[in-house]
Length: 305
Image (cartoon, rainbow, N blue to C red):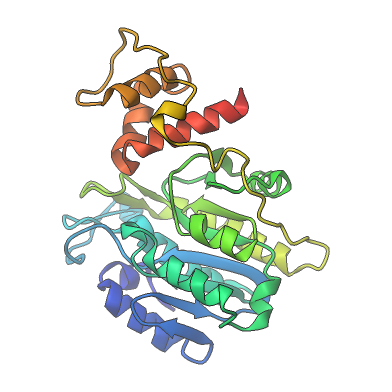
């Protein structure tokens, strides 16, 4: 059985080779792009193999009796926690899920794009067309669920029933794969925190708790009465992002605490969002995902007005 430390320390290339060897009899791989592992249950689990850190993990530090893991190199929970969760979920499941490990998500979803192209060209077993949902594990925290451009309310209610809370994000591999495959998708928490910094840490108990919920989802997907959740495009997903087209243009910046060096357009939308988010929360999103995240948060607020 693969341990969490086994997936934290290798490079992306080494981890790809290790997983390919582990699942070689059921794997369809394209080196440097993706590794698809065939399953029996009509559900596809996803995680990406790369991290943002410049060097591999050499030292792992344990706190709280081994529950908290950190590394001076950056622990790489984003998304090695997801990789580990997929492997464990596969091993524990009576009816095995499909798994997809992608490369280079952090630099624009390179592996996901290659997989989407291959899927459109029908290069995979036809059984893959029968999957009922896509479940990615590439989100910070312990109970977040992010849907990006997918707006299937039935699917969201189903995921919420498992104890997850809807949050918002800017991009992950399912942003590419859900519309390409026509299947509803969600990105779930996987127990890491402070992503993209050397202060990143993994809470193993939180990761294990999410894996238990995913085990329920896998069992549900295998039941005939559970439907296939279709990808439904969020009507605001193709919102005109040009600054001149945004309704907030000219809203006016009030005398509230704003980060320095924001352009006038971003300062306006930041000020608007302070009516719905606190400053520290906005700063987390902005630093983790860039200023474009402010636009996406703005659209999500519009949807709820």
